Length: 405
Figure 1: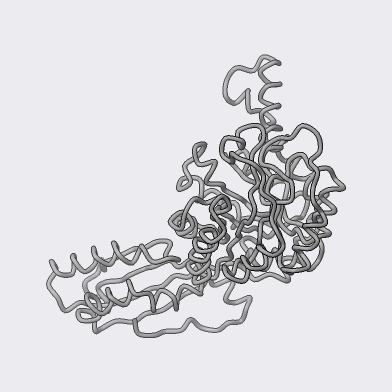
Figure 2: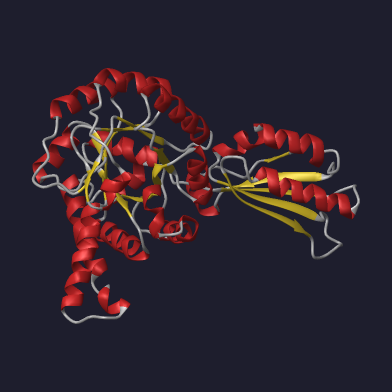
Protein backbone atom coordinates (compact mmCIF):
# COMPACT_ATOMS: atom_id res chain seq x y z
CA UNK A 1 0.00 0.00 0.00
CA UNK A 2 2.89 2.31 0.81
CA UNK A 3 2.63 6.09 0.47
CA UNK A 4 -0.75 7.74 -0.07
CA UNK A 5 -2.02 11.30 -0.33
CA UNK A 6 -2.23 12.70 3.20
CA UNK A 7 -5.15 14.94 2.20
CA UNK A 8 -7.14 11.89 1.13
CA UNK A 9 -6.24 10.05 4.34
CA UNK A 10 -7.40 12.78 6.72
CA UNK A 11 -10.53 13.47 4.70
CA UNK A 12 -11.37 9.76 5.00
CA UNK A 13 -10.76 9.86 8.75
CA UNK A 14 -12.90 12.99 9.12
CA UNK A 15 -15.80 11.53 7.13
CA UNK A 16 -15.70 8.21 8.95
CA UNK A 17 -15.24 9.43 12.52
CA UNK A 18 -11.78 8.27 13.52
CA UNK A 19 -8.35 9.85 13.95
CA UNK A 20 -4.95 8.97 12.50
CA UNK A 21 -1.90 9.14 14.73
CA UNK A 22 0.96 11.41 13.65
CA UNK A 23 3.75 9.89 15.70
CA UNK A 24 6.90 11.96 15.97
CA UNK A 25 10.05 9.91 15.55
CA UNK A 26 13.57 10.78 16.68
CA UNK A 27 15.49 7.62 15.76
CA UNK A 28 15.31 4.36 13.84
CA UNK A 29 14.01 2.67 17.00
CA UNK A 30 10.98 4.96 16.88
CA UNK A 31 10.55 4.48 13.14
CA UNK A 32 10.63 0.69 13.29
CA UNK A 33 8.36 0.54 16.35
CA UNK A 34 5.75 2.85 14.81
CA UNK A 35 5.71 0.90 11.56
CA UNK A 36 5.52 -2.45 13.36
CA UNK A 37 2.54 -1.19 15.37
CA UNK A 38 0.78 0.04 12.23
CA UNK A 39 1.35 -3.31 10.55
CA UNK A 40 0.12 -5.33 13.54
CA UNK A 41 -2.96 -3.09 13.93
CA UNK A 42 -3.69 -2.99 10.18
CA UNK A 43 -3.78 0.79 10.56
CA UNK A 44 -2.89 3.81 8.43
CA UNK A 45 -0.22 5.96 10.02
CA UNK A 46 1.51 9.32 9.66
CA UNK A 47 5.27 9.34 10.19
CA UNK A 48 5.95 12.78 11.66
CA UNK A 49 9.28 14.58 11.87
CA UNK A 50 9.31 17.75 13.95
CA UNK A 51 11.85 20.45 13.23
CA UNK A 52 11.83 21.13 16.97
CA UNK A 53 13.48 17.68 17.32
CA UNK A 54 16.19 18.17 14.71
CA UNK A 55 18.80 18.44 17.49
CA UNK A 56 18.40 14.67 17.88
CA UNK A 57 18.88 13.55 14.28
CA UNK A 58 20.02 14.72 10.86
CA UNK A 59 16.82 15.29 8.86
CA UNK A 60 18.52 14.70 5.52
CA UNK A 61 20.09 11.43 6.70
CA UNK A 62 17.00 9.94 8.33
CA UNK A 63 14.52 10.76 5.56
CA UNK A 64 15.71 8.03 3.15
CA UNK A 65 15.02 5.47 5.89
CA UNK A 66 11.60 6.99 6.60
CA UNK A 67 10.69 6.95 2.92
CA UNK A 68 11.95 3.38 2.52
CA UNK A 69 9.86 2.25 5.51
CA UNK A 70 6.79 3.88 4.00
CA UNK A 71 7.37 2.42 0.53
CA UNK A 72 7.69 -1.14 1.78
CA UNK A 73 4.77 -0.88 4.21
CA UNK A 74 1.72 -3.12 4.01
CA UNK A 75 -0.47 -0.29 5.32
CA UNK A 76 -1.14 3.27 4.04
CA UNK A 77 1.48 5.80 5.17
CA UNK A 78 1.97 9.56 4.90
CA UNK A 79 5.14 11.49 5.85
CA UNK A 80 4.71 14.85 7.55
CA UNK A 81 6.91 17.79 8.53
CA UNK A 82 5.76 18.89 11.98
CA UNK A 83 6.44 22.35 13.46
CA UNK A 84 8.57 23.53 10.57
CA UNK A 85 10.28 26.87 11.13
CA UNK A 86 10.00 28.54 7.72
CA UNK A 87 9.03 28.39 4.06
CA UNK A 88 12.53 27.05 3.36
CA UNK A 89 11.94 24.27 5.89
CA UNK A 90 8.76 23.21 4.12
CA UNK A 91 10.43 23.25 0.71
CA UNK A 92 13.34 21.17 2.05
CA UNK A 93 10.92 18.69 3.59
CA UNK A 94 9.13 18.23 0.27
CA UNK A 95 12.47 17.76 -1.50
CA UNK A 96 13.42 15.05 1.00
CA UNK A 97 10.12 13.17 0.69
CA UNK A 98 7.45 14.61 2.99
CA UNK A 99 3.99 14.71 1.45
CA UNK A 100 2.42 16.88 4.14
CA UNK A 101 3.83 19.99 5.83
CA UNK A 102 3.11 22.18 8.83
CA UNK A 103 5.03 25.39 9.49
CA UNK A 104 4.33 26.75 12.97
CA UNK A 105 3.38 30.43 12.84
CA UNK A 106 1.01 30.17 15.80
CA UNK A 107 3.06 32.43 18.09
CA UNK A 108 2.99 35.28 15.55
CA UNK A 109 0.23 37.94 15.45
CA UNK A 110 -2.80 36.79 13.47
CA UNK A 111 -2.10 38.89 10.36
CA UNK A 112 1.47 37.65 10.23
CA UNK A 113 0.39 34.04 10.82
CA UNK A 114 -2.05 34.32 7.91
CA UNK A 115 0.52 35.93 5.59
CA UNK A 116 3.26 33.40 6.32
CA UNK A 117 0.91 30.42 6.16
CA UNK A 118 -0.60 31.57 2.87
CA UNK A 119 2.91 31.64 1.39
CA UNK A 120 3.45 28.04 2.53
CA UNK A 121 0.10 26.98 1.06
CA UNK A 122 0.85 28.56 -2.32
CA UNK A 123 4.18 26.73 -2.56
CA UNK A 124 2.96 23.36 -1.27
CA UNK A 125 -0.30 23.26 -3.21
CA UNK A 126 1.66 23.78 -6.42
CA UNK A 127 3.18 20.38 -5.56
CA UNK A 128 -0.26 18.95 -4.59
CA UNK A 129 0.92 18.70 -0.98
CA UNK A 130 -1.49 19.60 1.83
CA UNK A 131 -0.71 22.12 4.56
CA UNK A 132 -1.63 22.05 8.22
CA UNK A 133 -2.04 25.43 9.87
CA UNK A 134 -2.18 26.25 13.55
CA UNK A 135 -4.27 28.93 15.19
CA UNK A 136 -4.10 29.59 18.89
CA UNK A 137 -1.05 28.44 20.80
CA UNK A 138 -0.35 25.07 22.43
CA UNK A 139 2.34 25.76 25.00
CA UNK A 140 4.78 23.34 26.61
CA UNK A 141 4.36 22.58 30.30
CA UNK A 142 6.84 19.93 31.44
CA UNK A 143 9.69 17.99 29.86
CA UNK A 144 11.74 18.66 26.74
CA UNK A 145 8.85 20.19 24.80
CA UNK A 146 8.36 22.88 27.44
CA UNK A 147 11.58 24.55 26.29
CA UNK A 148 10.56 24.34 22.64
CA UNK A 149 7.06 25.74 23.21
CA UNK A 150 7.35 28.43 25.91
CA UNK A 151 4.60 30.79 27.00
CA UNK A 152 0.94 30.53 27.88
CA UNK A 153 -1.83 28.62 26.13
CA UNK A 154 -3.83 30.80 23.72
CA UNK A 155 -7.22 29.33 22.81
CA UNK A 156 -8.51 29.23 19.21
CA UNK A 157 -11.61 31.34 18.58
CA UNK A 158 -14.32 30.32 16.13
CA UNK A 159 -14.35 33.67 14.35
CA UNK A 160 -10.60 33.81 13.84
CA UNK A 161 -10.51 30.17 12.74
CA UNK A 162 -13.08 30.79 9.98
CA UNK A 163 -11.20 33.87 8.75
CA UNK A 164 -7.85 32.08 8.96
CA UNK A 165 -8.95 29.06 6.93
CA UNK A 166 -10.61 31.21 4.27
CA UNK A 167 -7.60 33.51 3.87
CA UNK A 168 -4.85 30.87 4.00
CA UNK A 169 -6.43 27.90 2.21
CA UNK A 170 -5.00 25.36 4.69
CA UNK A 171 -6.21 21.79 4.39
CA UNK A 172 -6.23 20.98 8.11
CA UNK A 173 -6.25 23.15 11.22
CA UNK A 174 -4.49 22.50 14.53
CA UNK A 175 -6.54 24.09 17.29
CA UNK A 176 -5.82 25.06 20.88
CA UNK A 177 -8.56 23.99 23.30
CA UNK A 178 -6.51 23.18 26.41
CA UNK A 179 -3.92 20.55 25.45
CA UNK A 180 -0.20 21.20 26.00
CA UNK A 181 3.08 19.96 24.60
CA UNK A 182 4.88 17.74 27.09
CA UNK A 183 3.57 16.26 30.35
CA UNK A 184 0.74 17.30 32.63
CA UNK A 185 0.07 16.63 36.28
CA UNK A 186 -3.50 15.37 36.21
CA UNK A 187 -5.99 15.37 33.35
CA UNK A 188 -6.28 18.59 31.31
CA UNK A 189 -9.58 20.45 31.10
CA UNK A 190 -10.54 20.65 27.44
CA UNK A 191 -13.04 23.09 25.95
CA UNK A 192 -15.19 20.70 23.93
CA UNK A 193 -17.88 23.31 23.33
CA UNK A 194 -15.31 25.51 21.61
CA UNK A 195 -14.08 22.55 19.56
CA UNK A 196 -17.61 21.65 18.48
CA UNK A 197 -18.29 25.21 17.35
CA UNK A 198 -15.02 25.30 15.36
CA UNK A 199 -15.88 22.00 13.72
CA UNK A 200 -19.38 23.18 12.80
CA UNK A 201 -17.97 26.37 11.29
CA UNK A 202 -15.06 24.90 9.32
CA UNK A 203 -16.04 21.37 8.30
CA UNK A 204 -12.48 20.28 7.63
CA UNK A 205 -10.16 17.86 9.46
CA UNK A 206 -8.96 19.26 12.78
CA UNK A 207 -5.67 18.45 14.50
CA UNK A 208 -4.73 18.18 18.15
CA UNK A 209 -1.16 18.85 19.26
CA UNK A 210 -0.13 17.63 22.69
CA UNK A 211 -2.00 14.33 22.83
CA UNK A 212 -0.02 12.90 25.76
CA UNK A 213 -1.88 12.82 29.07
CA UNK A 214 -5.42 12.80 27.70
CA UNK A 215 -7.93 10.24 28.96
CA UNK A 216 -9.66 7.69 26.76
CA UNK A 217 -13.00 9.47 26.94
CA UNK A 218 -11.34 12.79 26.07
CA UNK A 219 -9.86 11.25 22.94
CA UNK A 220 -13.27 9.90 21.94
CA UNK A 221 -14.88 13.30 22.40
CA UNK A 222 -12.14 15.00 20.39
CA UNK A 223 -12.74 12.64 17.48
CA UNK A 224 -16.51 13.07 17.75
CA UNK A 225 -15.94 16.81 17.31
CA UNK A 226 -13.91 16.67 14.11
CA UNK A 227 -10.37 15.78 15.18
CA UNK A 228 -8.90 13.55 12.45
CA UNK A 229 -5.17 13.80 13.31
CA UNK A 230 -3.55 13.52 16.73
CA UNK A 231 0.11 14.43 17.24
CA UNK A 232 1.80 12.15 19.74
CA UNK A 233 5.35 12.01 21.04
CA UNK A 234 5.96 12.60 24.76
CA UNK A 235 4.33 9.34 25.90
CA UNK A 236 6.48 7.43 23.39
CA UNK A 237 9.61 9.20 24.63
CA UNK A 238 8.67 8.45 28.23
CA UNK A 239 8.07 4.78 27.44
CA UNK A 240 11.48 4.53 25.78
CA UNK A 241 13.18 6.38 28.64
CA UNK A 242 11.57 4.18 31.28
CA UNK A 243 12.73 1.04 29.48
CA UNK A 244 16.29 2.35 29.29
CA UNK A 245 16.24 3.24 32.99
CA UNK A 246 14.92 -0.23 33.85
CA UNK A 247 17.60 -1.88 31.73
CA UNK A 248 20.26 0.12 33.55
CA UNK A 249 18.87 -0.89 36.92
CA UNK A 250 19.03 -4.50 35.78
CA UNK A 251 22.75 -4.15 35.08
CA UNK A 252 22.88 -3.23 31.40
CA UNK A 253 25.84 -1.01 30.51
CA UNK A 254 26.50 -1.04 26.76
CA UNK A 255 24.32 0.80 24.26
CA UNK A 256 22.60 -2.28 22.86
CA UNK A 257 21.86 -3.53 26.34
CA UNK A 258 20.44 -0.19 27.42
CA UNK A 259 18.06 0.06 24.44
CA UNK A 260 16.93 -3.57 24.52
CA UNK A 261 13.12 -3.79 24.23
CA UNK A 262 12.79 -0.02 23.69
CA UNK A 263 11.04 -0.73 20.39
CA UNK A 264 8.59 -3.04 22.17
CA UNK A 265 7.60 -0.30 24.63
CA UNK A 266 7.09 2.28 21.87
CA UNK A 267 5.21 -0.21 19.70
CA UNK A 268 2.86 -1.10 22.57
CA UNK A 269 1.92 2.54 23.19
CA UNK A 270 1.43 3.29 19.49
CA UNK A 271 -0.80 0.22 19.10
CA UNK A 272 -2.85 1.27 22.13
CA UNK A 273 -3.47 4.65 20.52
CA UNK A 274 -4.42 3.15 17.17
CA UNK A 275 -7.01 0.93 18.81
CA UNK A 276 -8.40 3.78 20.89
CA UNK A 277 -8.54 6.33 18.06
CA UNK A 278 -10.41 4.00 15.70
CA UNK A 279 -7.83 3.75 12.91
CA UNK A 280 -6.91 0.11 13.65
CA UNK A 281 -8.29 -2.32 11.09
CA UNK A 282 -8.89 0.37 8.46
CA UNK A 283 -5.87 -0.11 6.19
CA UNK A 284 -7.78 -1.79 3.36
CA UNK A 285 -10.65 0.69 3.21
CA UNK A 286 -8.22 3.62 3.39
CA UNK A 287 -6.13 2.19 0.56
CA UNK A 288 -9.26 1.73 -1.56
CA UNK A 289 -10.37 5.32 -0.97
CA UNK A 290 -7.02 7.15 -1.18
CA UNK A 291 -4.76 7.85 -4.13
CA UNK A 292 -1.26 6.36 -4.09
CA UNK A 293 1.45 8.98 -3.77
CA UNK A 294 3.67 9.07 -6.88
CA UNK A 295 6.96 10.71 -7.62
CA UNK A 296 7.58 11.49 -11.30
CA UNK A 297 10.76 11.14 -13.33
CA UNK A 298 11.13 14.01 -15.81
CA UNK A 299 13.61 12.99 -18.51
CA UNK A 300 15.05 15.12 -21.29
CA UNK A 301 17.27 13.58 -23.95
CA UNK A 302 19.07 16.14 -26.08
CA UNK A 303 22.01 17.15 -28.22
CA UNK A 304 23.89 20.44 -27.98
CA UNK A 305 25.22 22.67 -30.74
CA UNK A 306 27.58 24.62 -28.46
CA UNK A 307 31.20 23.87 -27.52
CA UNK A 308 32.10 21.43 -24.74
CA UNK A 309 33.08 24.35 -22.47
CA UNK A 310 29.73 26.07 -23.05
CA UNK A 311 27.95 22.75 -22.52
CA UNK A 312 29.64 22.39 -19.13
CA UNK A 313 28.49 25.90 -18.17
CA UNK A 314 24.96 25.21 -19.37
CA UNK A 315 24.73 22.04 -17.30
CA UNK A 316 26.26 23.60 -14.18
CA UNK A 317 23.82 26.50 -14.32
CA UNK A 318 20.90 24.10 -14.75
CA UNK A 319 21.94 22.02 -11.76
CA UNK A 320 22.26 25.19 -9.68
CA UNK A 321 18.98 26.92 -10.50
CA UNK A 322 16.55 24.10 -11.28
CA UNK A 323 17.12 22.48 -7.89
CA UNK A 324 15.62 25.58 -6.24
CA UNK A 325 12.17 25.04 -7.79
CA UNK A 326 9.64 23.69 -5.24
CA UNK A 327 8.79 20.06 -5.86
CA UNK A 328 12.14 19.19 -7.45
CA UNK A 329 13.61 16.39 -5.39
CA UNK A 330 16.75 15.41 -7.29
CA UNK A 331 18.62 16.35 -10.47
CA UNK A 332 20.99 14.22 -12.52
CA UNK A 333 22.77 15.59 -15.58
CA UNK A 334 24.33 12.89 -17.75
CA UNK A 335 26.43 12.44 -20.86
CA UNK A 336 26.29 9.33 -23.00
CA UNK A 337 28.95 6.65 -22.58
CA UNK A 338 28.60 5.58 -26.23
CA UNK A 339 29.13 8.47 -28.68
CA UNK A 340 27.11 6.60 -31.33
CA UNK A 341 23.89 6.96 -29.30
CA UNK A 342 21.05 9.03 -30.75
CA UNK A 343 21.25 11.58 -27.92
CA UNK A 344 24.45 12.61 -26.16
CA UNK A 345 23.03 14.33 -23.07
CA UNK A 346 20.19 13.87 -20.62
CA UNK A 347 18.51 15.53 -17.67
CA UNK A 348 16.79 13.31 -15.09
CA UNK A 349 14.72 15.43 -12.72
CA UNK A 350 12.72 13.79 -9.94
CA UNK A 351 9.45 15.55 -9.12
CA UNK A 352 7.59 15.14 -5.82
CA UNK A 353 4.26 14.57 -7.60
CA UNK A 354 2.59 14.73 -11.04
CA UNK A 355 1.38 18.26 -10.22
CA UNK A 356 4.97 19.49 -10.39
CA UNK A 357 5.13 18.72 -14.13
CA UNK A 358 3.10 21.83 -14.93
CA UNK A 359 4.32 24.07 -12.11
CA UNK A 360 7.94 23.28 -12.99
CA UNK A 361 7.41 24.06 -16.68
CA UNK A 362 5.77 27.40 -15.85
CA UNK A 363 8.04 28.39 -12.96
CA UNK A 364 9.95 31.64 -13.70
CA UNK A 365 13.28 30.02 -12.81
CA UNK A 366 12.73 27.23 -15.33
CA UNK A 367 11.40 29.56 -18.01
CA UNK A 368 14.40 31.88 -17.71
CA UNK A 369 16.89 28.99 -17.80
CA UNK A 370 15.15 27.27 -20.72
CA UNK A 371 14.86 30.45 -22.79
CA UNK A 372 18.35 31.80 -22.00
CA UNK A 373 20.49 28.69 -21.79
CA UNK A 374 18.81 25.50 -22.89
CA UNK A 375 16.54 25.97 -25.90
CA UNK A 376 18.99 28.09 -27.94
CA UNK A 377 21.56 25.27 -27.71
CA UNK A 378 19.39 22.14 -27.61
CA UNK A 379 17.04 22.19 -30.57
CA UNK A 380 17.30 18.42 -30.95
CA UNK A 381 15.55 17.04 -27.86
CA UNK A 382 12.68 14.97 -26.48
CA UNK A 383 11.01 15.19 -23.06
CA UNK A 384 9.09 12.37 -21.37
CA UNK A 385 7.52 12.21 -17.90
CA UNK A 386 7.29 8.80 -16.22
CA UNK A 387 5.26 7.69 -13.20
CA UNK A 388 6.05 4.36 -11.47
CA UNK A 389 5.05 1.52 -13.80
CA UNK A 390 3.07 -0.40 -11.15
CA UNK A 391 0.91 2.61 -10.32
CA UNK A 392 0.42 3.37 -14.00
CA UNK A 393 -0.84 -0.14 -14.73
CA UNK A 394 -3.15 -0.11 -11.70
CA UNK A 395 -4.74 3.15 -12.74
CA UNK A 396 -4.85 2.21 -16.45
CA UNK A 397 -3.57 5.67 -17.22
CA UNK A 398 -1.98 4.72 -20.51
CA UNK A 399 1.38 5.68 -21.96
CA UNK A 400 3.46 8.57 -20.62
CA UNK A 401 3.09 11.74 -22.64
CA UNK A 402 5.90 13.13 -24.75
CA UNK A 403 6.29 16.84 -25.29
CA UNK A 404 8.82 19.58 -26.05
CA UNK A 405 10.64 21.21 -23.18
